[in-house]
Length: 464
View: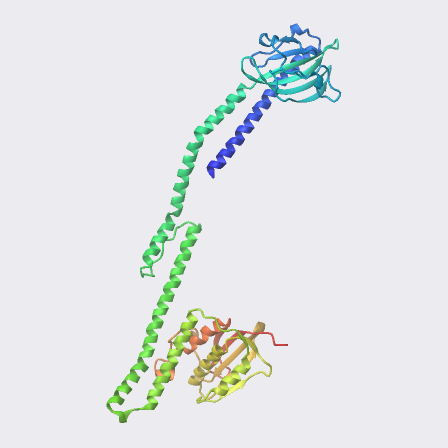
């Protein structure tokens, strides 16, 4: 691209230079012709005209019969530089009847202009003329009228050798300098590109080693503020998130294994005892451990699906109706549940199964900690949202622990038994499901003491 640009610029420079030099030569020829024409107009005899240097600016004074009246030695007996006109054309154009017929010395097309001056009329004719010595000239032709009324044509030329030498010198300099300039540009481009991409290679090499398993390492971050530095910062942020995710996954697997080990060990112990002593078989204990194992496996499967990015099935449902149905199917709750639901439908969009799981987990948590009563309420929220409140009159949740209780496998009361406290996955499932539905959950204090869990979901306009 640089080479094409330089070639185009060079061609343009040469064209402009050549045109300017040719126009300058034409101007010099016109000035010389005008000087001689002025002498003719004031009555200077043709044999006493002061002519310029023949080598640079040859001059011919030609009458209407194409006879050379005055010229330098080399051009005195030569044909006219151009056969222009016997007299000015009424429109300022040369008479076609008097143009050169068959004169090989000037067969180039001419262009001209007409102007009136004090004492004489000039018609400027531009053409290229081959000098007998072999040089090219820019020729200007002017019509001048003597005091006696005789009209003559003054031809003056200006050598184009300066133009050719200048253009040739510039062209040769470009031909010599262009390859060297391209070499310098290529070298500088290679060095600059290599230096600019060196941090990228460092990032790539460090990433290749990090992929070996050590996610605590970070790629080098340049001190600059360019795109490479932003790439390094984004890469380090990605590595940090990946490290956190992997650590969380490892902790999740460890906690899940720990939670599953207890019921599995209990089942194995009871089965081994039953095999040795069938009369000691306790079916109720086996069923409880099996149910607990099934519950933990179901929670782990749901969390795995949520972590995989599974989107909830979108369907329109009535949140108040969902609460009524869920409460109607609950059996064996320790305490009664007070319900406060609006008469009108409360439409939301989401998965009925997952939202029912949210309500069930919150009710299980409230039943576990309540002292005498559990309350469920559905109410309109702010800015078109819908709120679901589940409250109890238990000890409540300390403010410092209100964010921690949604962490997986967390139990605030370490003295609780696993059977009474669960696996510590219920509230984590609630938070993840609510977030997948575009809502959020908050923990606060109930009016009569205890904890209040508020789930806020985006509402939907009622059906007409």
